[in-house]
Length: 141
Image 1: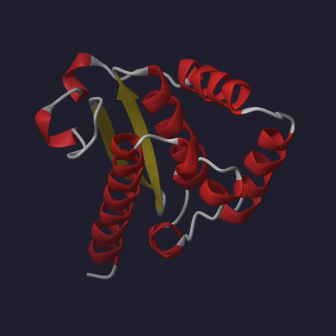
Image 2: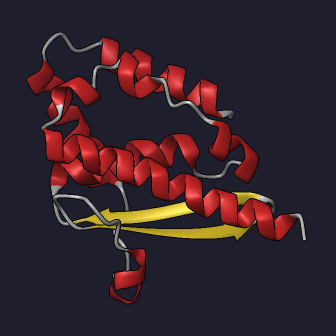
């Protein structure tokens, strides 16, 4: 499934909720479904800088696609990174680098996050795109 299709799926899911408390609860549920990382992957090199909570993001390159796994010590943050993984994982590096991730604005996520969480979200996206860029560069060698 392409990035745009995954985004549309998430937008449809969030349209079921009228108020933001229900959306937050849904994000938390999504986070709970994200498999955690082994302790060996909870290393400094995988920590995303600039997040209020601790977020570890581990990239792999398999069969021409970037595969992300992640964990966080905060439920909302874990849900947010789970949404990003759902959209961006198992995609070619080029598609990740070029993704505009409009679902974030369309579900109203950025406007309902605190400033520090919003910065954390942007840092997660930036890191995912940087990993994809690195894999893309390796691919072209």
